[in-house]
Amino acid sequence: MHPVQVIAVTSGKGGVGKTNVSVNLSLALSELGRRVILLDADLGLSSIDTSLGLTPQLTLADVIEGRCDLPDVLIQGPGGIRIVPAAFGSQDMTHLTPAQHAGLIQAFSDVSKNLDVLVIDTAAGISDLVVSFVSAAQEVLVVVCNEPTSIANAYALIRLLNFDHRISRFRVLANMVENQQEGRSLFAQLMKITDRFLDVALQYVGSIPYDECVRKALRKQRALYEAYPYSKSALAFKTIAQKVDRWPLPTNPRGHLEFFVERLVRQTNGDRMGCPPESVLRSKAAKDYANPAPDDETFSNWAPGKR
Image (cartoon, rainbow, N blue to C red; front, side, top):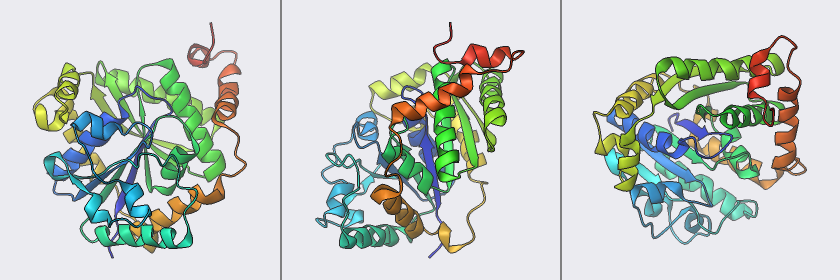
């Protein structure tokens, strides 16, 4: 067994381009020679299938039910990546039997021999399943864009993961920005809030510029990185992938893919029982925004619901 880098791409809300980031980061990492599997963890929308024009016959649900093996589910995607389609009809994985639990771990163990990076495209928001996937991953990449709700909801997600799951390190990517300065400014806004209220470390990964080629690629149901390889966004993904490729690999057994699956199953089978609903969690995070320091105009401007 060898270590596998598990990266959860997430955000506190929809509409920030999270799936676009997941897909094109995967392709850029593959171009660097990494063997990449992209796991569609948006069990409700199956965004990756739609954006790439895929029609999977089997999903992760079939593996869990024992109808097939994980290699049977894998779809060959663009740029050499492999894709695990979302499990339609399985909004959670909270009812796994011990045999299914063991089978799922074995399934991922079988593919880990030919895998370097597992990229997880989570659903939007801070639902139980999103938190389960994110808290089980080794790396958490939070995607934000230039909207007050994006920053506020990213903070709510980070707050929840820090308070409930003791995750203290987060990577941040600014998406759809006008220029690099705007990306750095967004990161500074988020870090200013987390520094005031949380004990976490944020690392800025970089930014992806707003690019009409993204829309064009979506209309073609193709990955931007493949359809427009010389676009400004594709070149930015290339730069981001080079940074991600330098992230250190875990050196202990917990870096093995089986441990990720074990943590994921443990999370979805009860570790979050009794956790407040998403609306309550957002409300708690919003209180941090509602009580800025008197001389801190930044907090006032970014407070959700402020007028």
